[in-house]
Image: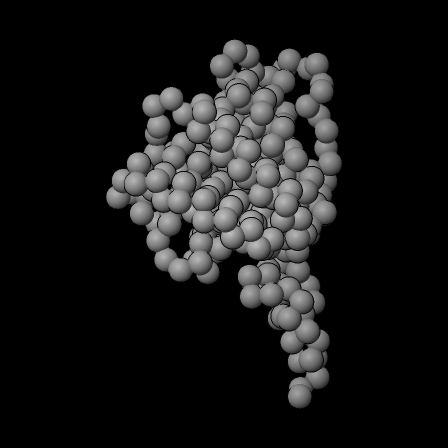
Length: 251
């Protein structure tokens, strides 16, 4: 075996297939995690400064969408470089807006921290993923938008499952699925998608605890949500159990 190959193999085994993409062939990381940590631990939301944010809300929304799209495209290095500035900009923007814009900023913060959770889980940064998940949930609650709360709860559910806290993950997913359902009124594709994804997340975590009856019940409800969503929602429940697990745990 060539020199260094053994250490690379061990690194691959430890990090896993998804995480290996985040590292070079040697030992140097593709990005500096310290920048993300600094952004995560910068608590500026309590400031009373009412100076308008340096970046417009429209630009922050564009950057949030770009970060989410880059993550979904597996461009993890690009996401890692964008997140610190984006998180700081969104946190600072909270104190520079008024009226309906406050809820909009919090919804964007929830989404950006959701992306952060996903990236940190890929990097096996489990402690930091909990911090990001908590901040995503708090921002979603502040937005008063059920879809944002449900999406953030799904991210938190994944963090809990990664630590094998399956009971807590199931309860979090199912409780927030009920919350989204109660608030739906006239269902939208977004609300139904969030609702169905939470049910599937709950089903996966319940399966890990061997709660067969609960799993079947949650899958049946998810199937009903898929039917309501129509042809655009067929992917919610299609495919084998392994596909369901992938759907719930990777985005």
